[in-house]
Image (cartoon, rainbow, N blue to C red; front, top):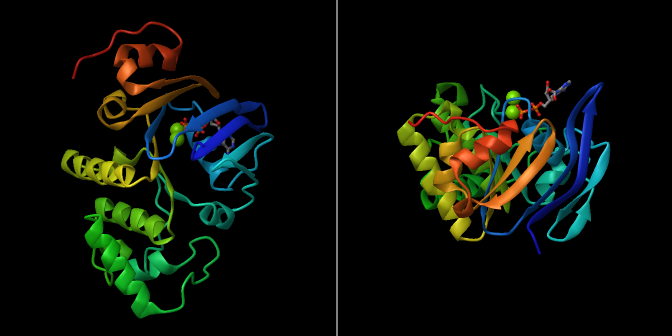
Length: 245
Ligand code: ADP
Ligand code: MG
Ligand code: MG
């Protein structure tokens, strides 16, 4: 059974068909890339999976079971963790407060602060996501704010971690560190969906890759069986000359 499967997901904003009949199957314990040019519909798909938008049509299955994701709490309960491009952290709250708060409804997910702190520190050690639990978010670098987002998802026991353009805000060294963490999570059975427009990252870290173009999912392939040139061609719908860098 795939960790997550989408069947015919569609979403329009007025005349703009942002997602058109998206099919996707992500096996458990894999890193799955979703690549597409700006405007291809990647973030819309991600928002649907977190209950920010209801799709106009289509079905979502988690662990083989159909689920209606009506809000972010439903997504969290279904085991979905999100790292957004623009973090959803409360700036003048501490790391610990952010991790234990339900970001959407301000509800405490667990009552005991001491236990929460212990759990946060355990996760930070285990996954090399060191960050001071008592630091205010506004005092942290963006790289460390991203660590808090990942810790928040792990604290909520996410099985499926979805990251939208996560390296855009990172230095190359931080990006390498993030990829080590993602591989570690994958190797212990978690499912990672990495949204990016960077071909190099797809080749570097993903097991499989799906290509979006103008709202459609135009291909899903094993990463080892494709090439940057082939992916670039799928992304834009015609042959392209790749700059080598
Ligand atoms: P990507 O993440 O691949 O860059 P998006 O999902 O952000 O793509 O956008 C896909 C298309 O949907 C774009 O044409 C974008 O302008 C449009 N779109 C996205 N969100 C909205 C919205 N809330 N209202 C209107 N149009 C939107
Ligand atoms: Mg965009
Ligand atoms: Mg986007």
